[in-house]
Amino acid sequence: MRIVPSILAKDRHPAGSAQKEDPMETASVDQNECIACESCVEICPQAFRIGDEGKAEFIPEGKGAPCIQEAIDTCPVECISWVK
Ligand code: SF4
Image (cartoon, rainbow, N blue to C red; front, side, top):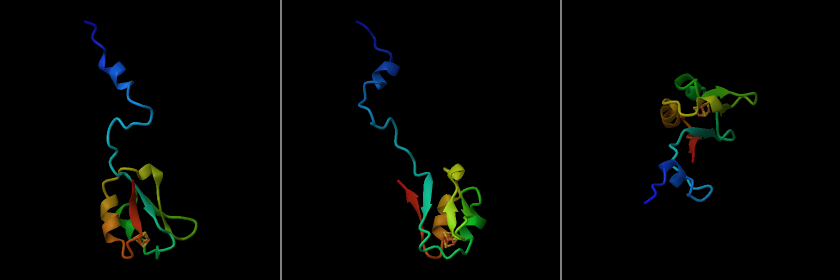
């Protein structure tokens, strides 16, 4: 009996099928709702900054930062959400 290496077996999954569940790591700011209070920037500067429009924006390099959820929870207008 021939043993198929597990790495080859994984390749048999259809294209686009997820190998694992991605955790929620990226957030998005609804800039129409943002009041630019800068709370998210103070709490999680790794992931949020005030952009050129004067509203908060997510910093892509901040993906996965552990402070994102706290920033979401403390936004006074609840305009930050996870991107699924
Ligand atoms: S906490 Fe909310 S309202 Fe305040 S700057 Fe961040 S996204 Fe905007």
